[in-house]
Image 1 (tube, rainbow, N blue to C red):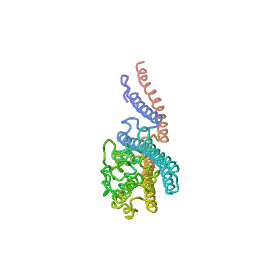
Image 2 (cartoon, one colour; image 1 turned 45 degrees about the vertical axis):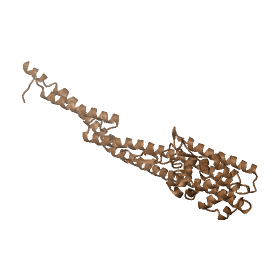
Image 3 (cartoon, rainbow, N blue to C red; image 1 turned 180 degrees about the vertical axis):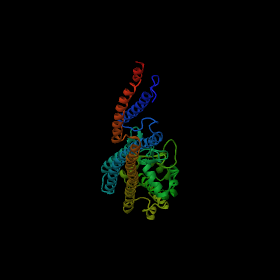
Amino acid sequence: MALFVNTNVAALNGQKNLNDVTARMNSSFEKLSSGSRINSAKDDAAGLQISDRLTTQVIGLEQATRNANDGISIAQIAEGALGEMTNNIQRMRQLAVQGGNRTLSSDDREALGQEFEKLLNVNNGIANRTAFGTQKILNSESPETGFQIQTGAYAGEQDSITTGNAELTALFGKVAVDESGVGALSLITNATASDLGAMGTAGKLIAGYMMVNDVSAVSLAAAALFTPVEGNVSELGTTAAAEVNVSSLVTILTKETVASAANSSEIATILVSANITGLSSELTTVSNWSGEELNTVHGFATDVLLDSMSGLITQVDKQRAKLGAEQNGLTSVVRNNTTAVVNVSDSRSRIQDTDFAAETAELTRNQIIQQASTTILSQANQLPQTALTLLG
């Protein structure tokens, strides 16, 4: 073997191998200190791309879960408020039952009316105050299509929470829609006798108001009960186009028809011709209501209030049922997202995370090789010294 001084090939090979093993050790140190097998693209280019996509999915699912929990919170807030409204309406219905007795004095009826009116206003207040943060969720500001909730990690993965409008006017509007369709109340303040029969509970409320307040014009009674907002006379409740006049509504409970009602025969003729259920044609033949006629009229007014309150309870319960279904749906989404996060994180871990058992074994191996390389390099560096013996 030739002996060189200028070029120590053995030392160069030793340096090369020592550099290689040192680089591998540095990589092991990085992986073990960070916990990640992939710390840069050079570690695993394809694995980096796959793990980043999985990271995107995990982050999206975690935020979507928080979004869904916000939706559940909205539903819980709305349902809590609707539950209290139901309690109030049940109490109002109880007051209407109590008011069904003609034995009550005017003072008794006034006392009933005060509580009845207060509860109506309280329910409207609940609907207008219930909010998620600053977002109103139970009045006309609540979108009919519901609040969109992003419940998935990708585009197009949305659900909704439909809290609905629980204002008094909107509830009456929903009753009317269920009973007679949207068009029945399109021009409520201009209603005529022929419209009343098709207007369901709303028509009966107008009829009851006419009886107890001795009003013979349908349009006047309709305008007294349902007041248009800013001149708007479109559909009741659905667009907050009209408001129920609480004071006028309460008169059906607090006032009692008297025998000397000036327009008794005229009112009876109008309402019987309008096919208002429960009114006998015999009422049209008397100039004044008395005896059995007064009992009939009073019974009709009581029935109107009872039917109205029952209708309101039904509408509130429909909103609560929808909220319950949507809340259960979001709860299922949360469970599914949580399961997906676990499984996707597991998949990402297999690609990205450091296997400490394997990596520590590799580090130990490289440390031994480094020690050997250092020793060999030291010996290789002594080879040119051999040449000095020839010179001597």
